Image 1 (cartoon, one colour):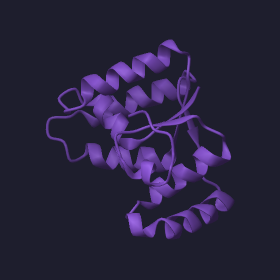
Image 2 (image 1 turned 60 degrees about the horizontal axis):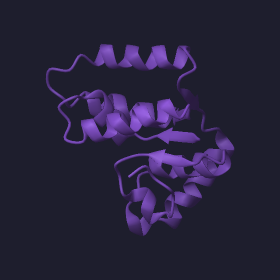
Image 3 (image 1 turned 90 degrees about the vertical axis):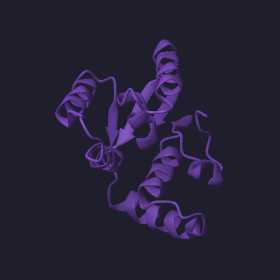
Length: 136
């Protein structure tokens, strides 16, 4: 399976005192056992690093290092949003504007569609509004 990891799943996975940590960690280990191929984007990493700044008593350098190690070991592939994908994302963003999706979610939608991914690993309901298969 080809799985795209969204910001909400990263946060719940990395931050142990998050409400959904155990549920997300179990799903992550299920993916690993199934030898799923894991993807994310630089847009997601931007969102993740920014959101981690809001947590008290978190060593953000540790989390960045964990992600860099996963990327270097080819356990996580970071997808690029080039100019053509960016333009398609604008169209999606405007199409789903009544659902108040973020532009990052619009880019994720395009990556999901363009690369024929199987599922988005997320806790957000936004992707269900766009009729995308999610983990939960």
